[in-house]
Length: 232
Ligand code: OAD
Image 1 (cartoon, helix red, strand yellow):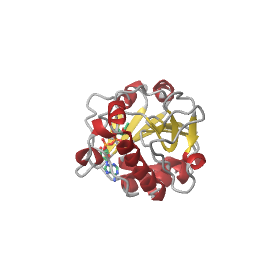
Image 2 (tube, rainbow, N blue to C red):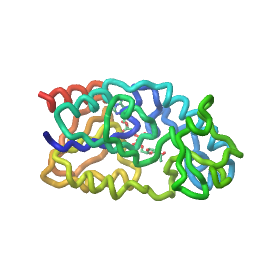
Image 3 (cartoon, rainbow, N blue to C red):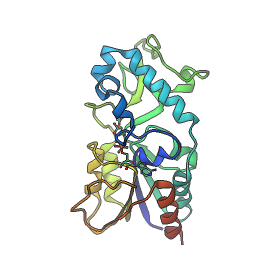
């Protein structure tokens, strides 16, 4: 039983119908990162930001796990599998993966703007529409916001993620442009002797990383095939 650590990004959910960020037609091509994913944007127009995440939450909850998410869950039959995801959807969990660390937060959750430890599942706030609006407050009376890491904010789980990477016997990266730090630097935490693999139809620049091989394919093709080998 190997200790397999998998770093995923928006590309693994692309074939479930969720847009990536930096591909042609990706979210940040048509939307302003500053306005929609930063503390300053939230101060400027909170309802615009809440509407953006209300819509993305709906899309994510309507989406279904694809063959890549399902294959990674299947891999637990034989190996210890830790997923570290930059994604804010819950498709890994719904596919059946039991150990999922969300680096950039979760769409299903919202939290207090005053006390970051007050985190709620959206079902507790608005079970019918799964939305928050200006005026929705936490139990201490302050505005709720998405439980999402915005640009310019700390990534609270990064140390835990780095520690997990240091213990990997095999490191797999799926569907991330490796352009957003600190997540993009996690691959450098993996021991030099550990085998690493990247699956992406448009491979990110990974020159200089030892023991790395690449599979230039979409997630639903490349991941199930690799998993089959790892289970074999
Ligand atoms: P990007 O949009 O930057 O990169 C998506 C990656 O997925 C690219 O390398 C694509 O080639 C690849 N890809 C596209 N379709 C694929 C498919 N079918 N199968 C496999 N790979 C595919 O998304 P991320 O790297 O996840 O943060 O972006 C990182 C962070 O930037 C996100 O978590 C988000 C964003 O701003 C926040 O919002 C905080």
